Amino acid sequence: MREFKVQRSIGATPERVWKTLTDARKLGSGAFGITRIEGEIVKGGKLKLWSSASPGRAFPLTVVEMDPNRSMVWKGGMPLGLFTGTRTFTLTPNGAGTQFQMREVYDGPMTELIWKSMPDLNPSFEQFATALASSAEA
Image (cartoon, rainbow, N blue to C red):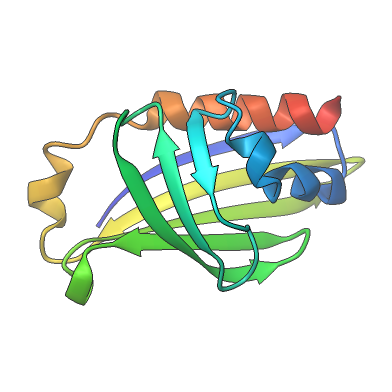
């Protein structure tokens, strides 16, 4: 198992952060490191996401869990579970604000092989958290 993770304190309520986090149009603006996103961010929704970290490649994802104002999980990968990426967004009330965490875990028999060719997503995760905070706090 391999992972990337980012945490950020955001000076906005979980409801405001959630509103931004579930707005596909806003997420696909480029500011979040996502250059394009197709589909609705709803439980069971099918998404297609293009990231600046891997230009020219679309990632098919499914919104597998959604607990409004608290958490959401996106999942994608290869057939038969050979390689799976699971991105979890967590919002925790923190005084008048929100503690945001985004964690992506990679699992499956091909993880080590694929991991070697993956770009470092830490800068992309930091960009996402910064853009989320800026948008929710505006």
